[in-house]
Image: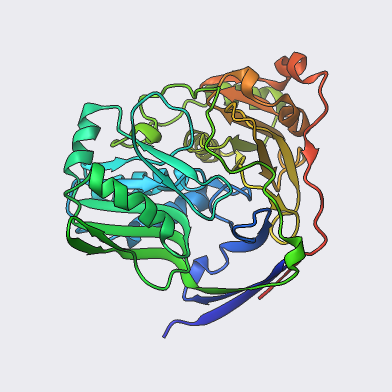
Length: 411
């Protein structure tokens, strides 16, 4: 019988109680935080995702492999793997790569959802109802071979950081099956933490498909709200927005489909810079949806012997307290006119910090670079901080997110 354990987090708007069944080595992979969001007041903060907490790349890779090994090996192909923007884009890519290595298959397509303005044709638009930014899209793959995999797919693997009600999965899979993947026979959901009571069940063209599921940690939670007068308003209105900045085009962009292993990144310019400055430790920071390639850079640097960590900026407004110790707020790099955040990072965390973006240099808020004393990587072009002085010299550093007095988490 699986051993049960409990965790309790106290927030200013209520108390979250979690009962975990099993979990083993992954039992402590999450903490709690308080969302600035009237739709849902709490957040499970992953210690292996690399979004809100800096993580060593090998820890993230171990989670990818464990999730891939939990997926049934007899799913009929072709298989489509989806990762949910923005939080699970890198997680989905990691699971996809791990699956390719595990099964040596050539019929597994990765296709993540997105909120970015990409060059391509939108296949599905759907809503993530509890999110601070609920509108998402799924694009048709850019390559003919990947489009063929999509059209003939018989299995669907849906990856996210957590599952609570299954509504987000259902909101995506229902139109996806109707519009693009009518031959799907099996669905499998895979998440870091699964709090859902029942597996996903979908009706399509008169057929009922009940998904199988796996996770690193499973259980249930209870939320007891208090202080309704503290219900927050979103800092930025949750509306569909048009980006004024387009990401750089890539042939292997998971948002436009990828069915091969990720290419190893070229880190020679970064290594040269680190050696010149005698830097031994480095934090690689992804931005928004641009997380997978920066993670691969961090992983490569770790393999070369550097003390490397990875994390990423986010749209999620979160109060200080519990798992969130500090935070910066700054403008987004996608021309959406919204706030972005970086949590649990300051410039003392490593000898070097590199912020990675897939947009033009001028789209990156110089206040973030100044606050972190960071170098900048635009695509594959490294710009050392000494060459960013003209950009950062006359701006103030990014502001800190205000402190939150409630800070209680106990087992």
